[in-house]
Length: 86
Image 1 (tube, rainbow, N blue to C red):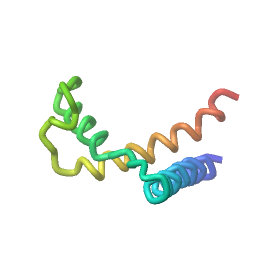
Image 2 (cartoon, rainbow, N blue to C red; image 1 turned 30 degrees about the vertical axis):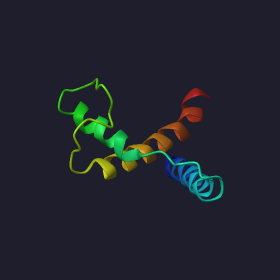
Image 3 (cartoon, rainbow, N blue to C red; image 1 turned 90 degrees about the horizontal axis):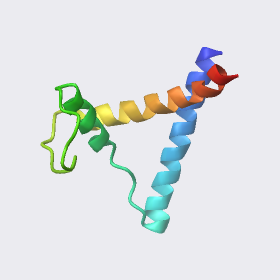
Image 4 (cartoon, helix red, strand yellow; image 1 turned 60 degrees about the vertical axis):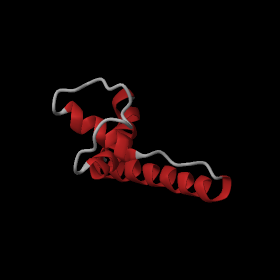
């Protein structure tokens, strides 16, 4: 059950990303920049919670990877929500 749920979370997140890339190509809608999420997480680990704008906050090495990993972990966690609630 756990393995299937993890695969479901990864698959759902992947489909969301594929849809985002289609929107970028077909509708010219820019996708989300998960490097900014990674930047926020990495600064949070250094004790900084709030920023004027995360875009103007100095970059940290590994922020893109951190953002994408967090994005997929969020999808996995969301896949577990129905199992926990029911």
